[in-house]
Amino acid sequence: MTDDIHRTILGVWRIEQPRLITSLSRMLRDVPLAEDLTQEALVAALEHWPTNGVPEKPGAWLMATAKRRALDHLRHAGMRTRKHGMLAHDLAREQETMPDLDSALDDDIGDELLRLIFTACHPRLAREARAALALRMICGLTTEEIARAFLQSEATIAQRIVRAKRTLSESGLAYETPRGEELSERLASVLEVVYLIFNEGYTASRGDEWLRPQLCSEALRMGRVLATIAPQEPEAHGLLALMELNASRMAARTDPAGDPILLMDQNRALWDRLQIRRGQLALSRARELGGAGGFYALQAAIVACHAEAETSAATDWTRIAALYGDLAALVHSPVIELNRAVAVGMAEGPLAALAIVDGLAHEPALKAYHLLPSVRGDLLHKLGRHGEARAAFEAAAALAGNTRERDLLQRRAAMAAKAAGRDP
View 1: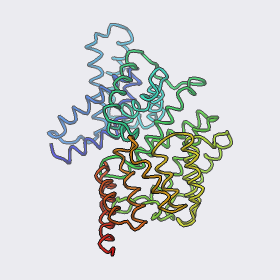
View 2 (view 1 turned 30 degrees about the vertical axis):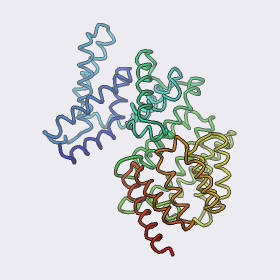
View 3 (view 1 turned 90 degrees about the vertical axis):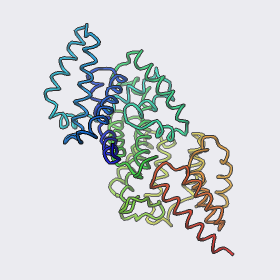
View 4 (view 1 turned 135 degrees about the horizontal axis):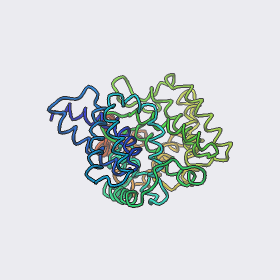
């Protein structure tokens, strides 16, 4: 198999997996089975496309293959009940109209995908497993990507997913979008899933590209739907505000070659002012509902400080540091504390920030987190300790899973090494 075809298959798979699993889950009313069948479709593509070439409509090919597998499964299971017979009949009829499938799915995949996430976030599942299950089974993130998002080992995440899938299969949990009190019970976990999907799109944890815009767009779409179906939930509006404000910077975050541009170096003329306004309105709504101190609203307030500053020099870093302090008081997280250190460094100087960063050196969750040595390298560079900065950037590059980010860190290491060579 050539590398080009392999990359093509995986690229198509990332795009089409949500379509496959939403369609099959709607028909079979069995989410784990739908996920298994989509995986079988991927295996079929890996077997056939290198020899026969990539189909003209690869998404339709994958869907047709997955539905044939679904039909075979029902037939082999015996289809003893009328329900099985009806499902098989429907699948067979849809097979006949497969060429028109893509356009039909474009109209409804959004709501169906959100319904699947609500199913995966059922209260019967362990809380720590809900988001991992949805991200892996429904949204197509790899176990490695999910482990990075949660700062957990791949083995831990894999075990959570296996247990959650078993519970989902054995319990016969309803494939539904809950309402009222049931919606509220699941909403926090659903918001977390959407938040993590957006984060993976905004800064990809692995691969050759720093951004995955499709994931950001899908998360934004779902966030807007959630704010509509849960209009009195302040955190729904807080999350929407956070995503809108972050997404407003997308056009400025990479150069024409796709390499990252750090926040302080971005051309703010490229920031989307309309999207910033939408984010500000969503944040105002979260505050009106009493949610100013919520997890997502606090983060949105931090991003709003950047959005409201006309230049990087005009950024209110003291305010940002205070907001990170509020966030750290709400949720104990070494990542939040690391971000607070960056803000403290801008507000009070790199020496104050370095003390915070060095205090995080032995945090188990940050052991393989590349941004810890990256931030430390930046602070050391600003303090003129260029040799130490080079070593920190090299350590960060070794931990980075994303190619673009690794290259950036290696360039910063080279710059620090050059500066160290000029030191007296």
